[in-house]
Structure formats: C-alpha cells, structure tokens
Length: 314
Image (cartoon, rainbow, N blue to C red; front, side, top):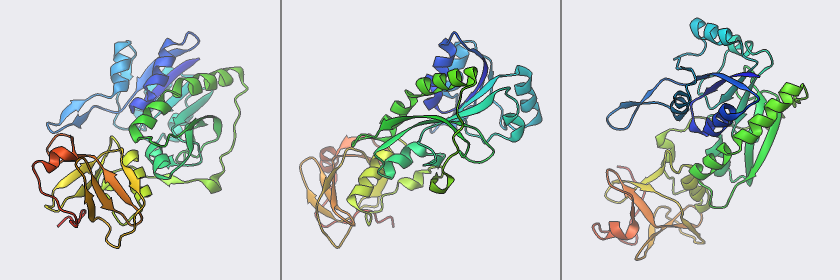
C-alpha cells in the first residue's frame, strides 16, 4: 500500500523505520513539525523523524498548519492508501481524514480509552497503572476517540520512568503498525468502538507540573518523580530557596509526621523527607545551573539540618 507518515515525536521512529524497510508498502512522504528553537541559545532543532527521513531520501514536509489548503492539496497529490499518524502534534481536520483511500490510523501510547491526550506515558505511571500498551485506532475528528483496530499490551515495571516506558512503547510500534497494515490490506481489520464512558484524559505537561507537593503521599511523589523523568523533571525548593531537581530512584519509607516537607534524617549519601503520608529518601539531585550530583556532594558545600523545610518558594 502507498503510505504517508505524519509524526514528530521520536516514539514514532521505530515504526517509521519499519515502514521504510518494509517490502510490502511504499512510503511516499513524511510530514513533521517545523524545526523549533532548542536549548539556551535557541538554535533550531529538527525532529528525529525529519533527520531519519532525509537520511533515507524520503520527501519531508514541515507545515505550520496541516489544515491549510496548500498542505491538504499536497497530501491529496500523493493519493495515499493509508495515512499513519504517530505523535504528530496537530489535530487532523476532516479534509485530511478523507484523503486516504483506505484509512487514517494513529498509534497512541496507552490502552484506549484510558489516557487520551498529549501525555499518556507519564499519565500511566502517575496513575499507578500495572500495564499500558500501544493502541492503533482509526483517526476521528475527536481527541483519541476513534474506533480501535488493535492493541498491544505491555506491563509497567515497578521502577519504570517516563523515559524507559517511552522507549519500550516505541519498540512496540513496528509490530502494532505492520500487523494493522496487514489487516487493512486484507480487508479484515476490525473496528471496535471505544468504551467512551471509561475514558480518561490528560493534558500537555508543563515544567511547572513537576513541582513536588510534599502534602501528597510518598507513593504519589515517587510516581511523579519517575513519570516526569527525564522531562519535564521534578523539583522542590531547599531552605535557601534554591530550585533543586530530584531524580529517581527514591526509597519510600513508612513514617508519620505532621509537617510534610521536613527533613527528618540526613545520611552520608541521602536525605529523608516527610510527606503527607510516609517519607521519601532521595539520593540524587541537581541544583539550578549545576550538574547532577549525589546528595553527598551537595552536602560537602551546603549546610542542611534536620528540621529544615523543603518546598517553600518565597
């Protein structure tokens, strides 16, 4: 079949690579987001999808808006049988959905209808889910509410981070996509309506979402730290009001204290901090503008005391 690929996030790279290597399908073009400013200098950075496509001499398009008349016309000119979407970053209008001869399908990194929206991987960890997966669905005009073609499940490890789960889900992409294309080509692909009443929704994550609320339970904060690693990261404020990033893995401790955020123990290599329920022992931190370091290295140059309170911004 003739296929156009729409994607920006690097979770789609394994699926795109599988399409490129497939002998059964023709990859016509790739559409990805425009290069965006990155880092402190604001240099433009291309998506990994674009870099891969150009290395394979696949035509690349980077429209600001997929719904513009010129872009829709360019898609029509390719006359694709299938449009494949993986973490593209824009909602597709009906004018695009109507273009492919067979279907427009999307690979979504959760077991729909759970965690519809922009950050399903982090949401799965934060919710304490035991499993997640990659869902292939027919794209509709709503947000991740199209009929399901198939799902591939994956267990979530106890020490899972957003980064590790992102990688593992991406590796499911080729299997899920190629099987879906096989079913579509044979005319035997199912359409299973989602259980809309069970749907959950997640919004785009901002850096400010990583601020630790020590009033929450130690279990919740542990999941937050793991879910938001490596991006956007989690942080708190030390007694000198400095912004400190916290890294996994942390240890959950059974503890009762009426003052969440209080340092209750200072070891040679870690800090133990009271939470709304329980406590956390942290061992790796990163002060703003500094390198990542063990707590012991920080304590060598800064004074902390049992009883100090974390999380007070001003």
